[in-house]
Image (cartoon, rainbow, N blue to C red; front, side, top):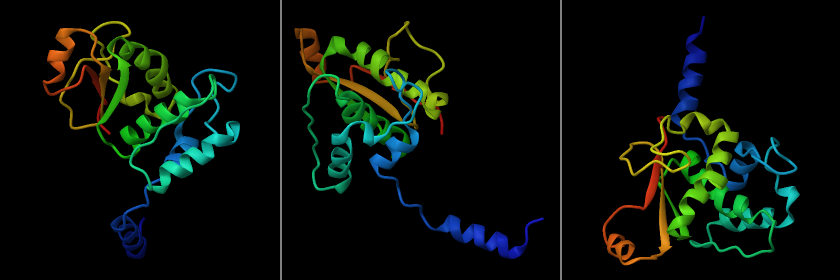
Length: 178
């Protein structure tokens, strides 16, 4: 049976907000590698030396925009795209706009990069239960929960250019309730 003092301590702790985790803390505590030689293991900045510097720069709050260049197979997609998207989606609980260069890359970014990373993590329970087509990201949906929206930076056809003036993304998926 709980005593009055334990109740007061619990309520006092709950009254103070917890410090949000940094992106590096989130990555190392939540991200499980979905493929590669370290499949099934937690993300570690020690595996790629630049990663600790990258997260230090991002977490410093000094810059509003972040750009990454590097050699092939150096983990740029995971460190500089997947982790920030999942951090803002699940840790900050924000709607995320994921920009892709070409509209036809949306399916690849979803199927090859984001979906496997979510499925490998404890956040897989938040994935939508139904899909409009195999492999396709679900269509736009209003949701009070997290949402990933894909936006193409390169408009390939006159129809895409016309649609770009309209509000809304090219593809998105809602994340079920927290």
